[in-house]
Length: 217
Image (cartoon, rainbow, N blue to C red; front, side, top):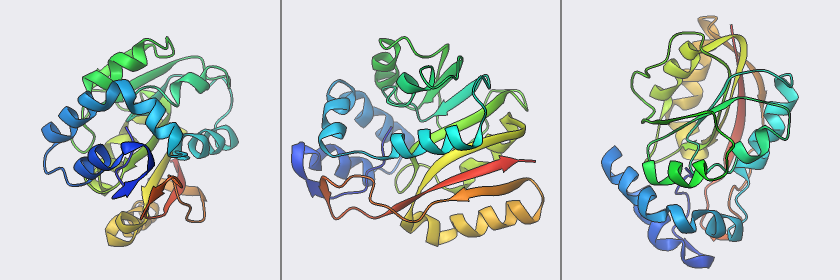
């Protein structure tokens, strides 16, 4: 799923992006993404959506090829999953709040399992289940905050990485401080943090985000 960062722009994104941004419950978010699923890929391409490319580059830089399994947390329609096998990651599971989005992703034959789940609460995976986690456009307003980090750390094996994007307003309102706390506790180390960038240049009023790589201790 993608973050609802803009309030207007090309391609008719105003309705879905604005509604997602203002959502008050996970049920509302899921329903909106279900309705958006069939046109999502084309609309995000038109908006110049950058999060998947940045996350893929960060993952390749910090996680060896062949690491398995991975979790695409917030997989949406599979924009990242399509590339992971090509890049040398042979087994990827998809998690998303929207069953409709995952049905589109399933057509791409790039995931080994599908999980209709919301981040932010307890996840039904054993500790140390995944060699890495990638999460593009999920940690943002109306979606998931810093409360989603603890479970992703738990299910990632020591030495694995969590690659994610964080919207600037979320970063400044507690997310950065939470990452620092996790580092101080020795649970993760900050392997890389990008400079802020605009994730959707085709949208007006887009708040910058940053990419972050956390290595699990």
